Image 1 (cartoon, rainbow, N blue to C red):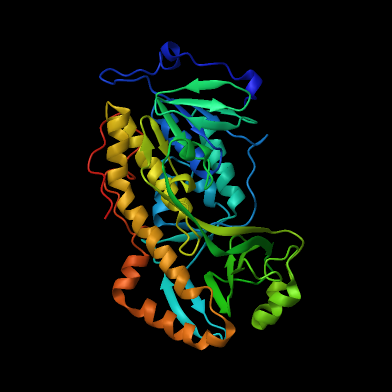
Image 2 (image 1 turned 45 degrees about the vertical axis):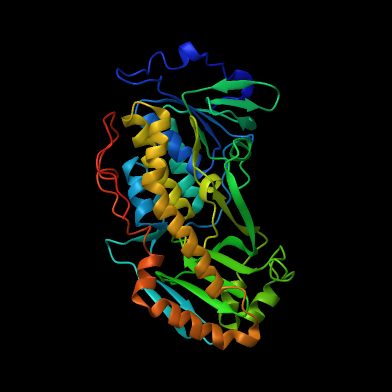
Length: 414
């Protein structure tokens, strides 16, 4: 891992001198901005395909906030394709179903997760460490304490302190408030959704053998109970941003127990940890400008109602690496990549927000109405198809193949 002082400049004529491939218009060198899940995945996938990759992270080290993370089939297959799946989920809990229950404990929805449609929930830190190890093995040069301020479509990135670097490909993985996306004029709209969540881990008790994700609703407060290892349970506690007691840190256990009395023993295990995050959504005009691509939350930030944000980022970053490695023009490759991947991503974002409107933001006086609405919403067969399109997408010819320098063939998102 490098610091800014030790990171050497990469002149245009030398940056890809050892990675230029016959028939390509550019040396195969890439700059990744952002050392989160999407940035590390993109860096690894490119490095495995023969690219010279440098990743810039503004924090002084690569560190991931705790709690758990949902990995659906599309994300699991993507992680498998870059060889980090086993390390990412070695402690994770394989879920048999996802259930939604109302304030009376009534089952409103049960979504099964058979072997061909998996949901595994590991501690987020395990996934992050696996991606860090994958990037290191792929030869990625990681530069910390390096803040990127803006980018030009020609592949030049400008950093705090006045330095700049240029590469054939720039991948902006710098989050919902992406400076690079803003500098390129790719932001169509951003929206605060009015609610948010506290996410944390609590100890899993001996004999607490559950493999079902349980989503409980009481008024405008939701509590997701999800075992994510032999030792940990992942809790996600959702409420409106205006709910001062609900978003209080450390968690106001008395207030949450009053909302969810059946879960009081679970809530009682909460310690002083936890972090509040607002739910926001981002809509980009395009996913690229010239030689700069935006990925993950920078391109399609969305709330976690369907647990697809990271999974979509992984699938889209894997496709990105395939397209730019198989098409001889960066600009053409990025346009083809967006055409292939964006329909499923935009669909998922729309249905994530629709689901959030149905289950969230209901006052206590209308809880029974909410139960009827949720039940009617999820019983319709086409609704199930719409909600599950991303994880059931058929990525033919992409995720089943190892890293390759060849042309991308038959990538479809259905």
